[in-house]
Length: 221
Image (cartoon, rainbow, N blue to C red; front, side):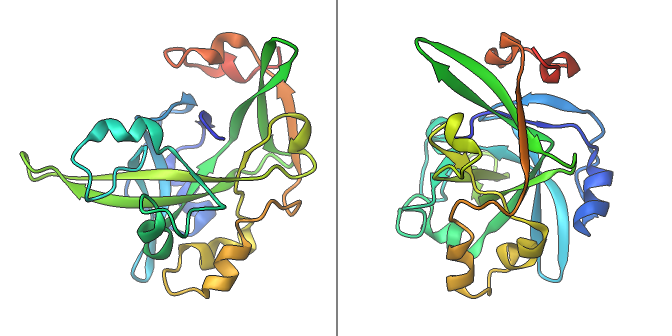
C-alpha cells in the first residue's frame, strides 16, 4: 500500500520538472501527507499539463458519501481496470503524484519500523495516480480527488513491504497522462519495475501520527 508521503518541492519547481503549468501556487514543504488531505498532482488538460491540488482519496461521481475516501486512497493494479470504483478513472483520468519520498512500515516480529523510500538520485518520484471530479449537490462546487495505484513489490521493496506504489519513469509520463494512449502500454506500466533506483532508511516513529509535521520526520532514525 501507500498511505503516507512527502512533497518538499514547491509547485513552481514541480511545474518545471514535469513541463507543466503551475495552477497550485503552493510553496510549503510537507513531510507527512495522509489520505483525505490535499496534495499536488500532475494532470493533462487537453494540450497542457498542469500542477494542481486535489484531495487524496478518490470519490467516484456516483457516490454521495465523502467518507469513502478513507478506503479509496489506493487502487490495486491487479483490479484497477475492472473495479467499478476505479475503472473509469483508469481509462480516462490518470495523473502523476510527485513525491520526494513515501513511507512504508517494515515489520520485524511484533514491531513496525517506519521507512522512507526515495529515488536514489534525489529526484522526485512520479507515482501512478487516478483522479475524478464530483460536484457537491448542495454547494455546486466541484471537488477533485485522486488515488495512488499500488502493485506487487519489486526486488528492492520485497524486504520492506508486500505492496508498493506504481512508479512511472520519466519515459512513461506522457503515456500515463494521455487518455488516448495504447491500453496495452498503460497496463504494462502497472507491473513492478526496477527502472527507478530506490534507496530507503528508517525514520522516527513521529511519522506514525498524521498530526506531526516538519523536516525532522525525514531525518534518519
